[in-house]
Image 1 (cartoon, helix red, strand yellow):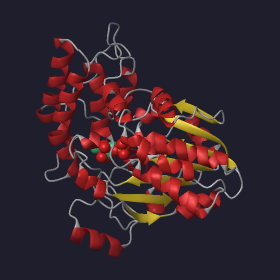
Image 2 (tube, helix red, strand yellow; image 1 turned 180 degrees about the vertical axis):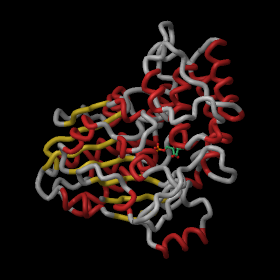
Image 3 (spheres, rainbow, N blue to C red; image 1 turned 30 degrees about the horizontal axis):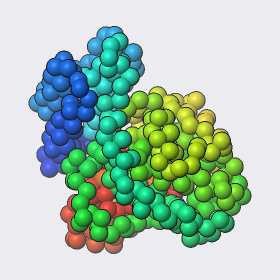
Length: 371
Ligand SMILES: O=P(O)(O)OC[C@@]1(O)O[C@H](CO)[C@@H](O)[C@@H]1O
């Protein structure tokens, strides 16, 4: 039996988690403060949160927070201790929850229910390049060919490449567009094999904008070609990780694609998707829902971290050994934007280590991994 490696922590010098908190979050907080005409109360609460997360101890939620009891239960002893000592997954999730608190998202008043990230998401959908980037959709085969599978799966993988929080640190530029997309492992055939006859497909979505547009193309194509008889699309129940898709982002993406939501696609949001927990802690009702599908497609970097555990895995650990057993076939579609990666062969790891020191976090490498 393999030892489970250590969880990644926020404050470990030289590691990616520390970079996210110290390099990415200051820009993020600035952008959020400027996103809406917030008052001084919200702006100073955002600045105080940033300062607390960089140098201080983790404060709890105010007693009137609707999810105070949830976070009290999810506190693994980190409240009152330095942020630097907390696990990356837990701390980052809580940081996003605290942004909502700082901007009064749950408090009666003008900012109640206002998505602090909405203007950033809207700007992404307004990008005129999206028309050109999705022109290939018109040429998709009408039959479920291997080429068709490869095209829609690859688009769904690399739609995950540049989410908004990621671009805060590594702006997309001409060099980026030219950078090769490389699939480091490719179990696309396993997805095609699971859907040899039509079945229900679940997609655990990640970001809105470009990524959910690609996810909708995948879902539509599986339905159009008779590979899926229905699709459940799980989105976030509240704003999270800047660009994560909530139900309204699905609407916006459908409008941008110029195709209304197919009546065979059901959109669901479950509290678990914004919890600081890995998939092994999935509640029974959500597990039952997922097991009602032939296959579950898990999108994105954060979901990958939650699926395998946000730990210091050896990259050659077999995917099936690291990924949580959800009792249903799972296919992870993800670009590598954090240090966690498993399921690679030793030669690939050696090549990447030698050629590209930041390959684990650059977003240039994709995975299609099935369990
Ligand atoms: O889940 P996503 O949208 O693919 O990526 C989330 C992300 O941008 O946030 C984390 C750091 O903030 C990293 O795991 C990753 O780079």
